[in-house]
Image (cartoon, rainbow, N blue to C red; front, top):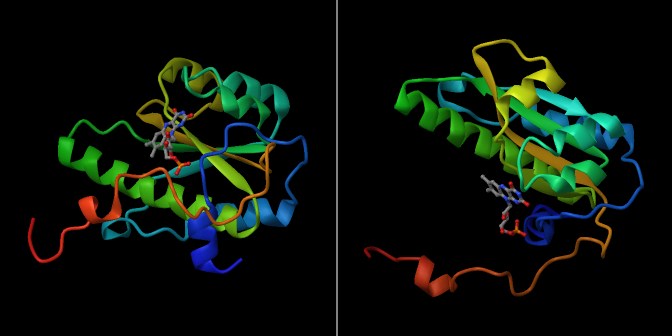
Length: 171
Ligand SMILES: Cc1cc2nc3c(=O)[nH]c(=O)nc-3n(C[C@H](O)[C@H](O)[C@H](O)COP(=O)(O)O)c2cc1C
């Protein structure tokens, strides 16, 4: 897929087929995360990749909207510092947003679907993933082939109208 195709074909996938991901494709998705830009190149993240079915099922319980993780082929849990300074927190969240999308577009380029999950139960997350105190789970991105239909460019995405959102020169 070309970059533009990958950008326009990416969509939130919440049901995955049982097909596993080729190991080299998962590595590429992880490399996309590793290569992501971050403020002052701090790289305020660690990525824990999970492919074990039972662990995925458990991980799906850290957030009420994370049920789709149970059926994914893989999930990447993004671990960040439990930052108390609001400015630091803001930058970290921005940076993991960039890493998330970079993984998702890299995945779409390979025909692999992806979904987000927020995190509620930090204690369960720590129990499952074993990250140290002072770190928290920021976000989970899960991956797999879509169960419904292959990814293809979406002509009319479900978005606020383009001309309403884009302001030219001033509001
Ligand atoms: C920060 C963030 C958190 C999200 N959390 C969840 C979630 O917990 N569960 C879920 O099913 N979708 C989640 N989503 C997916 C959004 O609902 C989805 O991206 C949005 O509806 C746009 O649809 P699209 O991704 O298909 O373009 C999240 C998205 C973002 C950016």
